Image (cartoon, one colour):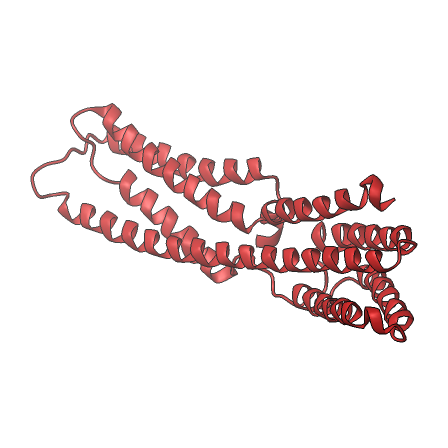
Length: 265
């Protein structure tokens, strides 16, 4: 259920996150105003204390969740960046040994990047990666093996060949690290607790007795409801597929553009 919600468009996630608290607040505020409950002396100190406690707990938990989810997303992006950077280096080095490899490596690389984009970025790939992307990757590895064999008898290029082999090995580990990583999405129980605390924060503010001016009550209640909704939208946004996919597609597009340059055709 949570994964389905995070797969929704960002504007819809924000609309739901902000709209639900506001819909809850409006009838409560109307009820408070219609019953003419006002602030009188120390009568509201208990409610204020409850609001302060719930709001503090909500803020602390929210900060913890945002930091952890953000770090997970950044780590996943760094893993993909390491793979694409290594892939770029290895292929450029391989092409420097034999220019005839350029069109071959270009085709293999573009096919692999297209498979990664379709089956491992736009879709949730199984642990270990999608078989179609893995098959495209293995073709690149086989090309490196062929290059290694062709350079083994050339003493002048031995050191350069060793660099390519080392980086090709690193590329294999980079891919294995990326496809075996756990998803950086929100934990279901943590999300549920955050939502409950968010609603309690909104409710405790809405239930506070009205000040002398009615519009102040509306500003207080709707202001807190909107703020809570916006912050929850941020949490859902950085956990959503759209957020991670946007950055990952940018990295893949940059590498694809490199291989579309005339020099690599």
